[in-house]
Amino acid sequence: MKKLLYLLIPCLVFFGISCVKEAPWIYPAGKGEYTIPSKELKIAVVSDIHYMDASLLKHNAASGAAFQAYLAADPKLLEYSDPIFRKCISLIIAEKPDILLIPGDLTKDGEKVSHQAMAKLLKQFDKANIRVFLIPGNHDVNNPEAAQYDGDNSQPAPSISSNDFASYYCNYGYSNAISRDPHSLSYVAQAAPGLWIMGLDACEYENNTNIAIVAGRLKPETRQWALTWMAEAKSKHVVLVGMMHHGIMEHYAGQNQLDPGYVVDDNESIAHDFTMAGLSFMFTGHYHANDITSRSDGDKILYDIETGSMVTPPSP
Image (cartoon, rainbow, N blue to C red; front, side, top):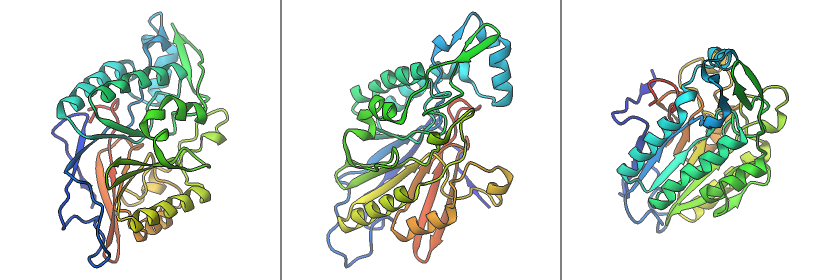
């Protein structure tokens, strides 16, 4: 039975990384000295913000036929995404975490204007000395469903490319990366001495045509790149924490059959390889639910820590 994570603080999941010998991500004794974080670190996680810039709704479009039809097919509190996220920002800054992880779906449907607004909002964390690391979700890049609404009508809005995404969010994992995967928007970056964040891009935006593809997969080259850097982290005795928009394992039996597209393709094989490579934590989103699940291979355990959406009630 899956284990639900009920949160007392809305909008945030805080996961403390403790630097004690018994920490489960420390490699077995006898392997040499370990470069573990020099202090306890506090990590905030916010996923699936789905930010929609207010300029995309004109002339009472929020109650118009086109926007209401969109919400009927995919219910979200999009009209209130700005005040919801601004409240979340204030809560995070008040909690003073060291690091903020955002596992994708920053925007409603990848609208350029929404990304521009999001990039400006994230600067508040820079001023608060909170390091932000993020990756795209299936809504964020090359999205043919990007739209603006005027009264009862809608029309296409400019979206962004993968290069645009890395440029807009250059300060949040990309410009300071230890390594960038040449085949995706994946990267490895140092979050603190002895701690690396691996952001994995499993989205299929390059294959989008008339609609945005919901499902995710890791390209073979990206998968091998990830395993190489897991081995590098292990050789350097560095803690590596993963982040991916799509789940890396099912959160309930039959999820892939009952609700396909929310767990990455070939997940069992990928999860096995990553577990054996020493990865212990993968932070995910996409399914708009708070949940932790795990798998084990011998004495190795991998946790998939899934965080719900900011704009899906009750906005966890």
